[in-house]
Amino acid sequence: MKLPAGTEGGTITPHHDEKFFNDMKTFHGAVEIRTTLGTGFILYDKGRLLAAMFRTASGSHKAAGALPFMSLNSGNAGSNPTFHLRNYNDQEFSRALEICRESRLLVISEEIPSPSGLQTLPESAEKTGDSIGRSPVHLDQGKLNKILSQPGVIAVSAFYEGFPVQSIGNADFEHVAATAEDFMRAGVKIAQDMNAGPLEQMILETAENKFIVAPCGDLFLCVFTSADTHLGLIRVVLKSIQCETTQ
Image (tube, rainbow, N blue to C red; front, side, top):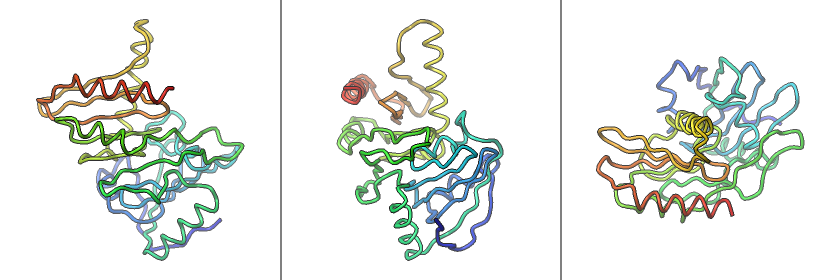
């Protein structure tokens, strides 16, 4: 499988390049990724992660199964990742997307974006027999819209292995998804160490905003609100969605 060559976009190391996160909001092309574990790529379209593949010594990992090897804050990810950018025009991008579809590499369904920028995952898993990962169960647009419609909510994102896979509203989830997932996993460990039962939600408050992070099936949800927002109803809505997801 060979993707279009595109136009050279340079090589960067995201850990040392804050500009990377802003550039990815407008990037339209393929990102070749190299780590100590192997090599791979993602197909990216202005904030939408569409497809992924990663090759290690043990085999090839497709779609969502490739993401743990590329996440900057994942325990599976190799060290010292470098990202090589290849910009595509519309014709090159369409060809790359078709190649990824034929090779079963799609992480999200590019056919159903909403005007608000919601990103959704396909219902069926896209993976090879030797992939250790699987596509997380997606949330439909109605559930995220229900959260966003609550008073004071600015944005909502669902993320998986440090990557935002569904986002709606006005916030830079590309930048904070990996950190939010680390925050949630730390909370899970604290709850376990204290024998306090399963962790349902975590709340972070600052002088300007509030954040709720909650597990939801295979995903984590992050809700971003204004500082004066009353969280009671939002937490009830989140709990309802969590229960529906586990049924």
